[in-house]
Image (tube, rainbow, N blue to C red; front, side, top):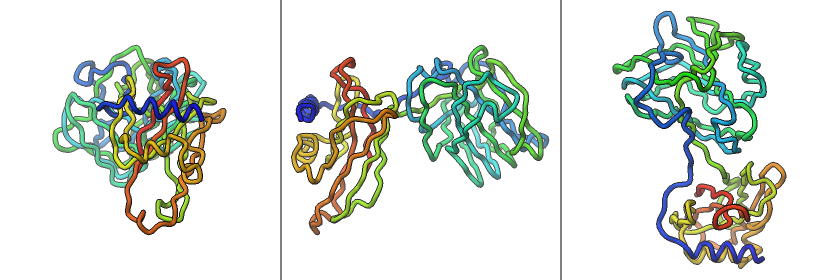
Length: 322
């Protein structure tokens, strides 16, 4: 395919580069300034249990579809926040911010669930929560982030206060010593949500199957903002990176990469070139030959999409997977 040849030519531009995740800062990347707000992490004897929601307009998310992989807040002091149980969920919403938690969170997706929660906080620095599952944000609707926990406590000097700047995203909250986990309503604070850093990946590749000789490894591709655009998957023995303009492809320019993007061995690199569907989803398959010599061989995979309106014709670039 001509586009496969184009991908290979782009790869020949390789120089060293940086990682492929992006950060969204709401309202700004200033984790050491602002006003202090103790909701929802100021756990005390009368506030052991919390439910807290941030409701964020699409404009603050850049009005672009992306996969959310983590969130971070900006504490005013260092130490540790613990809880017996903590859960973070996300949802799209088209409603105005409500005192009813379910209105803000109509289709909850759990992105973190922990028994024995422990959050290490650093004063004036972004302190990530460490989400364990992604959330695919559609780029159009408002985003709700729902945090709830039971048995909260503070240690090591952390006072539970994080920075915020008024006049931006909203919050809904409720606290107490019991029954808060399943609370249905709370208080609304317009434009008073905590500062938050949202880590996003605009393209995601997730392997499915076992990488061993004689098997097929599927790569599930997601890039919601690139629906209908061509994609190309590449594999290599190293993590590179290869710099492509402002993008970084975390693969190494080696013979495996050239074979996988150059249309060689189509029976091995199946659907490594194609088009994402109307939802920005695609699948590629690596048919691993049944050769004992391949046992234990490590390789990496990543992909990019093509967009004729973008610099170098590259729409997005995914991180790599092993």
